[in-house]
Length: 280
Image (cartoon, rainbow, N blue to C red):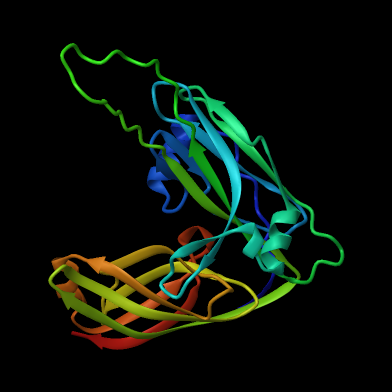
């Protein structure tokens, strides 16, 4: 796969109801946590123009959110480990330097969207490559008055309030980049905790790869297993992916199958890699 940096088409400002509906109908279109809904959940920019993320409050009260940029590195299991700025490498530091956004704190009334504007300023001397940060949206706790302890009670009463947040990647691609991907060693693991489908995903080149994993029994038109939004970032060459499966999926996946890795449906669903095997 060979391509220049992908451009991003700014998503339209739409009513909250329409945004919520799109998130439900389109895989990967939006993500929700607590009362916060964001769309899209992943931005890929080419450095020539910016983009935006739309935030919506689906609750009944106003909520305040703080927006920050974080560095995270993918490990071989696909987890994203936090990286302190002091431990950042040159590529990670450059990613923080070239990305600007505003506002950095928003208060969202119910059913009213708010856009976060994102711009990219790559310098002329910035080497070609892929640069990534993760934008974090964290709900700020509300201040509640201190309540008197119930009569006759002893000790301290603690009220735990969950703090919700969402993290999404922002990827900037500069120059002409290449990537190749392959699948290997697909198998089913049986354990007392349940069954899992595992597969090794390899990547080489100068950019990340991202798409959906699908498993088709031989001759079947429809997949019996789908895992959407699976990526392998440039900091690793091999990801060991593992997914829990239901007993019904495990039964349907036994025997000859074809495992496919495709670009997301909204990007055309082009085949990235595939492998034929027999699962047992």
